[in-house]
Image: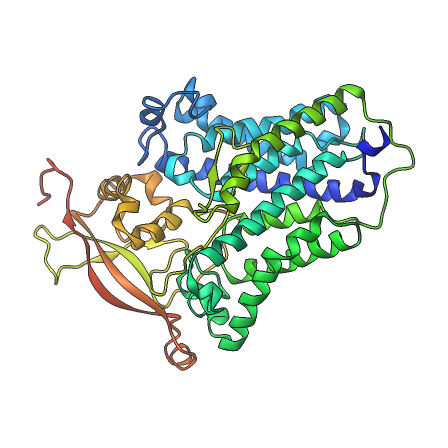
Length: 474
C-alpha cells in the first residue's frame, strides 16, 4: 500500500530515533545512579514493600516477579547499553523484526522501573517517554520507509502535550489569563537553572509577551500539525524554538527535550531516502494498523479529560502508559519556600548549637551558590524537596526515612546530595529541618554580595530528631 509509507520523513525518523535513544540513556542512567537510596532494598520507599501490596495487573513490572538491588542495577545498566546501541544505529543494521524487538527492550525495562518507582517516578515525562518509546517500536528501520500512521500518532502525542498544557493553564491560575504568571514563575519553579535569575529580571511587559506567545504556541499552533506541508513543519519548528526557550529558563528533566524530539518527527527535512527502499511487508502493515487502532481507542479517556472543565494533569489511564494525559503549571506559586536540613553533633540540641546545613545538588540552599544546569538529567530527590516545601503532606511517605538515613550517614543517600557537613565515620546526633522563604536578589545586591538568593526564616519544619534507641555518644 503506497499510502502506508512516507519516504519524505526518512531523515526526520533517523534524527527522532537517535535523539529518543539518547533520552532513554539519560533515563536509565538516572535510575542506575539513584535507585538504591530511593527505592532499593534499604531505600526510602523500597520496591519489595511496594510489590508486596500492589498486584502485577495494577503495575506490570519485571520486579513484580523478582527484586534485588543487583537485579535492578542489571536492568538499568542493560537499558543504558541498549540505548547506546540504538544511538549508534544498531537497529538499522538488523532485519525489521529484530530492530523492532531491540526498541521493545528499553520500553519494557523502563516500564518495569516506572511501575515500581512510586512517588519518585510520578512525573508526566516518565509516562511521556514510555508512550513515545512504545510508538518508536513500530516506526521501522532502514528496511522500510516511515509509516504514515505512526507519524500521525506521534503528532497526536505532541498535540496532547501542548494543547493539554495550554488548556490547564487557561482553566487554572488566573495569572495565565492576565498574562502575569511569569512575574513569579522563574523564581518559584521547582529547580531554577543558571539563567533563571536573569529571566526573572526581564522587563514585565516582556513577561506578558512571553505568556501570550505561550498561549499561541500551545492552543493554536498544535492544530497546524495536522495541516499539509510546509505548514506542519513551520508549526513544529515554532514548538522547538519555544521548548529551547524553556530549556534555557529552567531544569525540567527531559520534558522539554522529549517534546523537541516529538516535534522533530513532524519536520519534513529536505533530503530524501536512499534510492531504493523495499515495500513494507504485509505482516508489518497489519501490526502497525492494529496498534494504531488500539491507541486511538485508548485515546478516549485522555481526550475526555482534556475537554473536561475538571481537567487533571499528568495521569495514565492504563498500567502500560500507552496513552496518557499531560499538562504542567496549572497554578503558579507566588512565594518560594525551601526546606533546609541541618544536623548537629551536640548532645543536647538547642538554637545556639553548631547546626550544619546539608547541600543539595540542584535545589536552592546557600544563597551565594548559583544554580547549575542538570536537565535532561533528573535529580529526583531535589524535585521532591520542592513539593515537600509546598506542603508536608507531599513528603509524608519518605521524608522521615530521609532523615533516618542522614542520621545513619547512609552512603547511598549521601550520594544524592552535593555535600554532607559530617565526615563518613561521624554522623550527626540530631537532624532538624526549617522552612525558609527564598527570593531572588536585585541587580544591585548581586553586584555587592555575589548572592543570587536572599532567604528569610519562616518556621520550624521538623524539630530536632535523633535515631530512636541509639545511645548518645560521649
